[in-house]
Image (tube, rainbow, N blue to C red; front, side, top):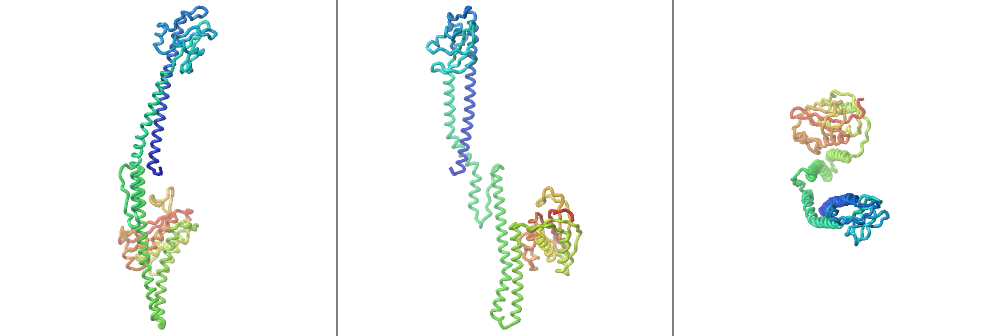
Length: 464
């Protein structure tokens, strides 16, 4: 019974049996009501008819003993039904009765509508009225015929329910297995998936029901896992490639020092400089990786109100000092305040400006302002405006494929690889930091038209 298929079958069978019992019970009670109501009407009709006939045959003292209650004139009125009549005097003594009651105990004196009772060993329906002189008239009808019919009907309902039990179990299990077949396929496919083959997908067929939606959801999850695993492998390969060169430099120069450097100051100096540069390269890569890991771990940011326009101005001044030959200028700006972690957001903005200095055409423009929130991914419902910071350059631009991958970690275009600078972590780091602040980055570029990266952030406390 640990199988969900069997549990579903049992629930289906139990529900079907409950429905049969409820409908059978309702039908049984309905038939019972109809039969007993018909019997009650027969008893009441008998009382009325006999009372009318006896009204002309009684004397002043209400003596009805001389009446033949089995007279055809009376029994014809009864329609041949099993209804017997009894007449009692004012003191309750029986003065006349139908021959069918001669071997039965006296009928209880009852005046009123039909009620159920017991006469000897039989269940009967009893009703009575008052006659002239205080006498009483009782009509009795046996319920044996109705009870026998109801007993037969109950047995038929029970046999039908028992006979339907086996088909219900078989049918329920068949339906359950058919309904859960997509789940079995999902389980089998999941078992066949390994880290070396994440391309398997669950075949989707049939109506677009909940199980179809489940299959689509699992397929989407598998696609994301495959993409994440591919990115992880590319990440490891790229990190290994970028670390291999400085490690080779350190190893080569350490061997050179071991062999020849002891007595040659020039070899010692050259080796020291080369090892220092290699160590600095590895330190930059490790710091970038640690920063990404810290942001990805969703560590709580130390946020505070920040003037975005002032941050842009400071970054422009730093860029002019670092790259005096480049033209770095401020575009249209207005005072805008956001809530952010100053250190992290400063790193993200600098990553965008540094990318423009490295791969642009020598001119970088930084602008800040407010704009109405755009519909789409990343835009918050109900927001009236968003703060933006854009960094534009006049470089060679990017193709559509390069623009779609520019935020991937360790991805570098062919032109960037030719220049041999950077690890392809600047833009991914910037996007991770901005998304941690609830914002987004958009890239606009075309070959020969330069590039523009725009940071969108929720407004912290409106205009400064």
